[in-house]
Image 1 (spheres, rainbow, N blue to C red):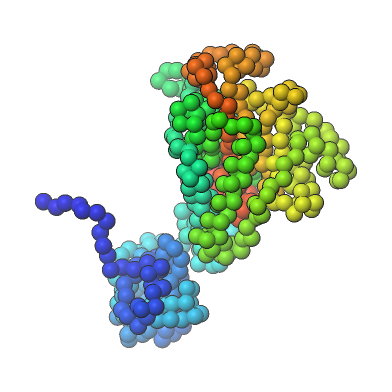
Image 2 (image 1 turned 90 degrees about the vertical axis):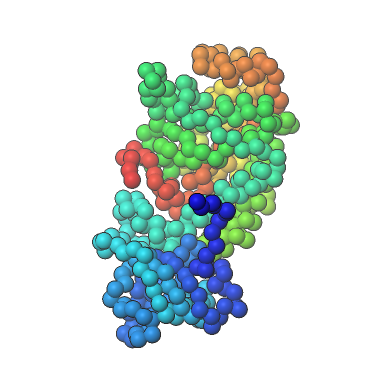
Length: 443
């Protein structure tokens, strides 16, 4: 009988341990996938792709113990060799091969030139062969940055006393309402895929005071643009006992500050690979919705066509305005019109045509929607009626407020959009592992 006693130890080293100067000149063992082979005749450079970067290995005819012809790109191998310093190699080190074990070999040649620094192929080709295209170092780095954003979100909110929750994605009714719903049959009953965890996270404020979730949401919008997806990852939080919706904006500012510091410290390698300059987040300006429209209309000689919503061009110009005038990468646009916000949004007590809500724009693209929610039961009932809605399917939600709730608010951040702007892409599919849009259901 065998017992598991924990993680197994191994003599195979990762890149971080190979940086130990005491190992120079010693025999080491490493594994990885053959990223590329550069045959120079008597010598060849076999570059291994590992989870945290590239490692240069040197094949020397007559010394390395195998025939180079037996090795192919995409083979996975274990290498034994002597660790040397080499400033021209990735990480400043290389392994001079003295033995190799081929763990697996590909059965077909690579369909994409993943070893090239920039993967010069169409977006469709990259998405059709996603698991292969992401082996490219630059493509892979985008998703390490995305990991850093989620890590920053989680770590910062844990630090601020939030509890992580996990809410259902199948429901009887949507938090947002409207027609943009994916409908399905659930054991002979109608159901929908959730557009947001909104109702659940509000209910959980009555339990934990502060909650957050990172999870998929679904929007059946028939948009085929560079900024829209039908499934994306939403970074959501909701917090109770707030004084105003500005507390929500301040918390998001804190998250961005924490995350940019984390990226700078822990993801410097990926920032360098992608040539990213991190945005300024020491202070973020806030402007009223109606004032923002007036500012860009005046400066850019643009007529205000829709007084109740921001058109994509207006968002771009607002971002441009605040970059030019205040050198700001982000801007909060506050007090959105009530008719464009859902039933749970709290109206401005000074002017009920507007809400105590906001969007956060990053270089002219909306990446966050948030605000203060209605916490009074009777006010909620009145707002639902005013919106022409019925209470069917909202009974559990409304009961939460019937039995008392603190002033609260929250937000949702589009992870893929935030990543897209941070890494400098112009299509959200570039920063989505496996996009779901109007035409794509696979891979």
